[in-house]
Image 1: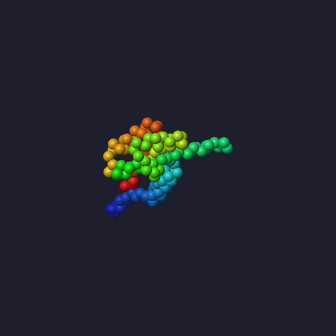
Image 2: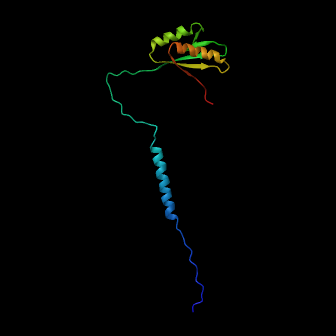
Image 3: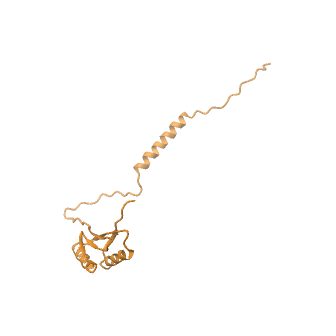
Length: 131
């Protein structure tokens, strides 16, 4: 009779191969996610020898804290602002006003300029500073 105790064998799991597989999967997904961008549509546009380049014209309109208007760095009276902008509108087809306003100016003054731009059918953007 063999009364010696048998040693229990414990199950061992070798994870070195699994670590390699996980590393390669992670590397694959990182590379694949940087290569694909679902928001970008790549187009090959046709070429034309007689095509025109349409440039968007912008006009800088500024309003300081003393309520003094300037259009392209030229001082303009409030009453002449609409006529001045209409002359710029006649010169350029797609005109955009870049409005720079001091932060202490009343919002009603900004709305007045927006109304003039709306009347003349001119696009307008409000210039801000980065935080």
